[in-house]
Image (tube, rainbow, N blue to C red; front, side, top):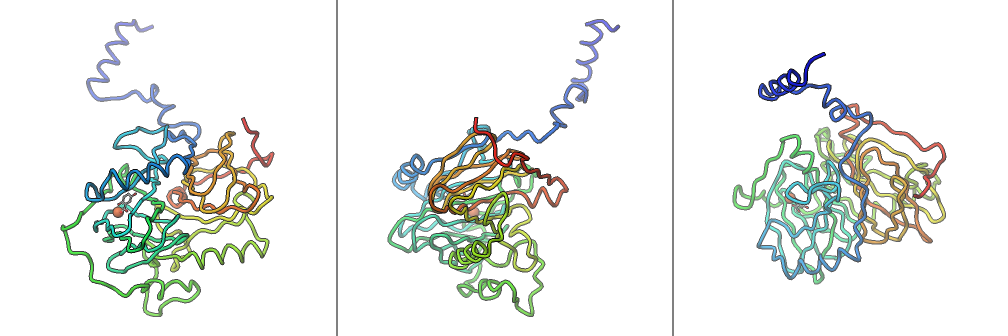
Length: 353
Ligand code: GTQ
Ligand code: FE2
């Protein structure tokens, strides 16, 4: 048997030599199941909206790049490393009439889903995309983008970005206003003219790029697609009437890092619980309902946001009427890396603790 002194000497020597004994850290490095630091959490619009409005008065757009209130997960640090899940950033962005958020670009991919307000636009590499409630718009990696509100009411939209995983992977780059000229103006609606018809594509395009070439997914089409699918009775046992926004050239997710989903939860339905690797951030766009996440019930209504960490049991249901949820997730990463796993709950629904 080694003496305490021998052992102290040995472990001290290891530390000085910058060697780590795997037998002391194995469980941390190789958990038996995903161990997200993020926890399930709900941000109530009732509590968030007054702060969003206050930001319009107290945080001039000139002070920073964007007027954005990020959803800071209670399981993660509340500092420069704050995030919504272990990999994703969800936030509300607020732009007042007449304001413009200057152009910049970054390696991280972004999406916006408009909650309320008409008259806003995002210009991506010179292509202006006018957006209204329910519209979904992309600002792909390294594309110059600015935002503007030329309407008469404030605009609130949800931002979804992969900045957390991009930073963790040490892949982040950023360029701000003035570092390069923003792209030359392109025709408004150009990407939609080329790509929004889905089953047809321009003859000259090679549509296999990493990001969706379609920048703007209008609510009119999205809502219609949900209605048609609902009417056909073809639904997902876990997510009810759920559709993913696709890259029109590949049929895959809009980004290799992040996929986005719109789902209609029909009144009176009780979809089953499941869990899978990968995390998600949700925004209630219409109606009200609740989710059970890891046995905890979260009631939500329009404007509320919540997150589901990796491998957390979750199920969603509408309240009296139907409800519509928008969400972002990192499932493309899990799938591409061979890390995707999923299981359904045998009992169907969770017991609420
Ligand atoms: O609007 O360009 O929530 O660059 C985070 C980073 C929004 C944006 C965010 C961003 C933006
Ligand atoms: Fe940005």
